[in-house]
Amino acid sequence: MATEKKAFVLRIQAETLKELERWAQEEFRSVNGQIEFLLNDALRKRKKRNWESDGSEPAADTTKPNPEGVG
Image (cartoon, rainbow, N blue to C red):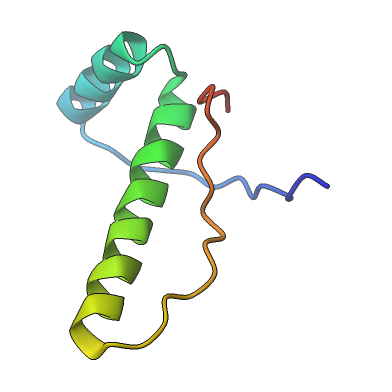
């Protein structure tokens, strides 16, 4: 079952958007897919860091990336 995605407006500096567009193109992703990939990666790293610092079990990973980066 696919998870529902929520739409929202993102205000971003023009130069940052240009860099994201270049990076997404290099990775064969849409800009939206690239942003989603980066956010999911950051969340996974944060969960891992928190788990390592407090010694508890990591939470279930609900941030599975879309391998094709389509989005």
